[in-house]
Length: 233
Ligand code: 13P
Image 1 (cartoon, rainbow, N blue to C red):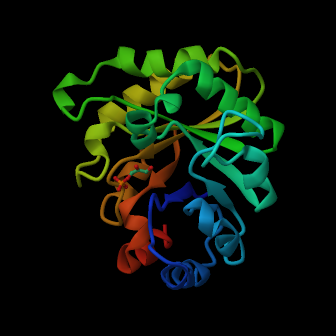
Image 2: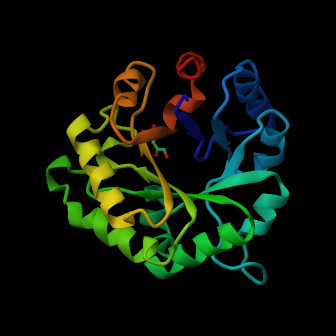
């Protein structure tokens, strides 16, 4: 079974027409097991080209006077099947993506609306030497302790690997998988993803890592040559 490839477009592309162009590359592939996370305004457009789409963030509320927020229900009604929760870029910018209680509420909203959560965790320092396992434990344990028998993807994305061109090393990723599995303790159906500078020239090597079931890919999901090659994996 091939690994699942999740493509996080972040705040790209810039227009409806550019989105059409990017989607035309995805349309050429017969590869199964891919998910695109476009900006919310392009969700429906992406849904026309790709079976599996997801949203990059959801509100912890289900409806009401929350200007700018998008609910899990809205995303599901546009065809989303997955939602990213607490990406490090959101953890850094929005307080609500960085507290366990809000993250738990978002995951509950996701399940209520049949979205599969993709929870991002990882070392928060941009300095590789300051990686501390306790950061992962503190991010994950209080959240996972609230769920049993649920399907969830945990994306391990250390900040120093995101957009840096330098993915985490094999030992580092294996260590993260071990911590995640220990915390879960077989309670939930957890699939571990890796994200951070995944490219066509390193995906094969990264795919050999025990316990990694797929990848959350940022920058390379926007570049035709990279994408075409990644989709062949
Ligand atoms: P890059 O692949 O650009 O490093 O981004 C990773 C990421 O943040 C995916 O969510």
